[in-house]
Image 1: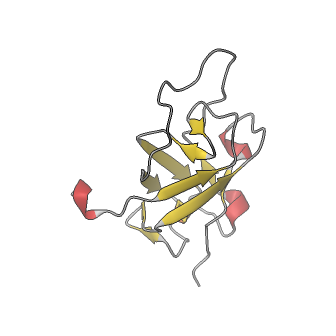
Image 2 (image 1 turned 90 degrees about the vertical axis):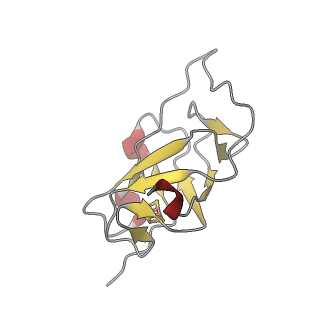
Image 3 (image 1 turned 45 degrees about the vertical axis):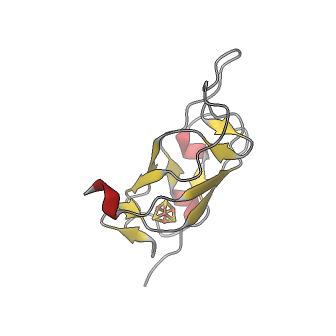
Length: 110
Ligand code: SF4
């Protein structure tokens, strides 16, 4: 059930993403990849879309909380392929594609 999951606050340095506003995220939900990830740099934000001139999200404020589905099941915050962290940090300045972004909050569980 949707309401059972924690929504996370996203801080994001990927300022050239369509959804980025003031280092926050305007997307209603994001998807993080990293099925076999064992460190943060092998995860990525799959929702990244590179901004084109004159093309930006019309939402002018980042969301306070965002639903995150996440394939990085090796992360301590991953609960049934959803992110259970209260906040996450996505990095990837000047990324040209999702693979150049990552979830820096990823923490490997033994
Ligand atoms: S903190 Fe972990 S579970 Fe949450 S989005 Fe990042 S990699 Fe996925």
